[in-house]
Image (cartoon, rainbow, N blue to C red; front, side, top):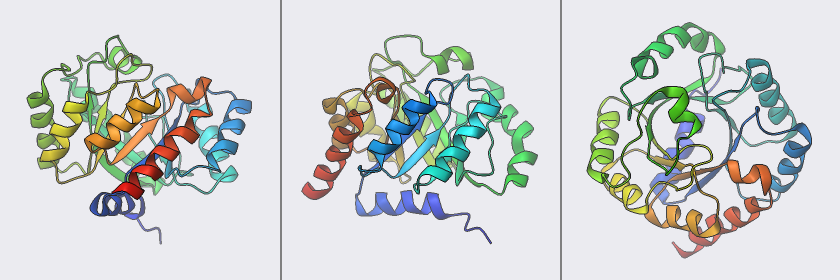
Length: 253
């Protein structure tokens, strides 16, 4: 029988011992097969923990094909980061059941979840309830446009903290601070630090992390799991830099 706590437990344990984790986000709608192969070659030499698969506009067949390829080509867990209720593949190891807490779109708070629930139960996937907080990032991102929601103001740490705590109280197992794909600015360091200081569940941070310094900032601010993706589509070699940052941070702490 499948252990339905495997991936969440590994994230919780890493948080408990203070070991930051690294996930690579693959968007099937953007990455060509040849580019994915090159990225996997680099990833095999790096200290990554997960592959996330997701995207706002990915077609279901492309989504499923990418998940299957990742499971066949490498050994790291594959976690679904669904852009809609059709992004479900039983070949994956787990799925982040995202509830967009920063917005007030009822479809993304509960509506899509109701539609997807029967298929999720049948899939046998490990389902991880995740509070998803979109943060203002300097430009209109795909997730903001597609979700018809306003992101949290960058300078309002208290709103981010209260929203994250509400998610924790509602039973979310993870909180995800997201600047969005292609963001000009990452989630502010002060916001990461403020949210992390109040949570007792793991904190994921992603979006706009395009340089070594931005990655280190998220690490030092307390992110338990950092997601990188967009920058790797053009500069896959940056994955080595991010991996080295995680290893160096772990040795220092």
